[in-house]
Structures are given as C-alpha cells and as structure tokens.
Image 1 (cartoon, rainbow, N blue to C red):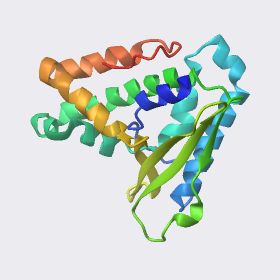
Image 2 (image 1 turned 135 degrees about the vertical axis):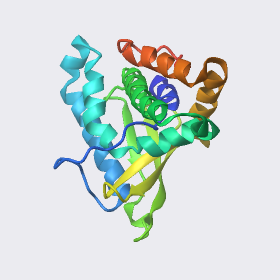
Image 3 (image 1 turned 30 degrees about the horizontal axis):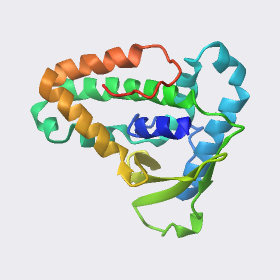
Length: 218
C-alpha cells in the first residue's frame, strides 16, 4: 500500500515535452500511456542495482522516461490559478522551472516504494478512444498483492505544438491531484508570496532523493 500512498502525493503535473526522435508518438493516448508506463517500470527493474547504490538515479529515469509525456506549462498555470495574473513573466518562467524540478524529486521519492515483484498496472481498453478527440481520461487500476485495486484516472490532452498526447492530472479514487496541489501552492503563496514560494520549491527540489516517509507537503 505504501506505493499507492506515495503516488497520491506525487501529483502528475510536471515537465513539458522536449521533441526528440525517441519520443513515442502514438496517436492513441490509451496505448501511449501503457507504453510509457511499461518502459518506465521495465527500466526501474533493469537498473535496480544503480538505484540501490544511489536513489538519485530515479531522477534520471523519471526525467527521460516519463516527463516528455506530461504537460507542465498547462498544469503549472492550473496550479497557480488566480495567482497567475499577479506574476511577472520572469516569475512565471522561474515558477515553471522549479515546479518541474520539485515534482521530479517528489516522483523519485514515490518510486522508492515501487517493487516490480509486487506492483502491476491494468490499463483501459484502447478501443475506447474516439478518433479526433483532443482530451481524454484514461482509466487504470494499480494492483498490489494482497490489497484491493486502486483506481487511477489520467487526464490527457493533445498538444498541437508538439503533436503529442500529454497527461496533466491524475485522479486517485476520485481525488484530483492537480486540484490538491493547487490548493497547497495557493496557501504557500498567500503566506510567502510568489518569490518565497519559488524559493521553497527550489529548496525541496534540491533535497537528495530519500525513501518515502509519507510526508510530501510543502
């Protein structure tokens, strides 16, 4: 159950895609999500030795395998919400950068609980995708041995600039992690301002990856 708890705080709202030849450009987002997840988990299993020696190796795997398929700019704007209009262009760009780094670190801590021998993911039927759609919700179930399955829905949108499907939110048992993170960030901005929030995110992002302890709040 620890992995599932960790995933609920590792909000899937991070990192813009970088175009390169290795990016999976499947036109069906259901198939894309399954491919990305399988490649990520396979790499974790294959590089378990490096991970055991240095947990920060999770950053490399997450950055290279997962992050090209997540819409950071869209998600970061949603997280800032009404605060967006009160920021300068320089502040926004800096926020996007440190928010990206912070969530990569958060994912790294979440994945310290992943055990390829115990955890599996069941994916929705790819035939549910309607040709021409620009936004979808892909349903998955996370299976942990001896535990009830956990429903996790991924909200995805088509990025016309990169010609790529990207995820921007994960809904765990009905709870939107994007909305949860937005509420948390908003509270920090009220108490510390946007510059103070950026500095706090930077501090958190620079902390070494450690085993997940159940506390990922700012």
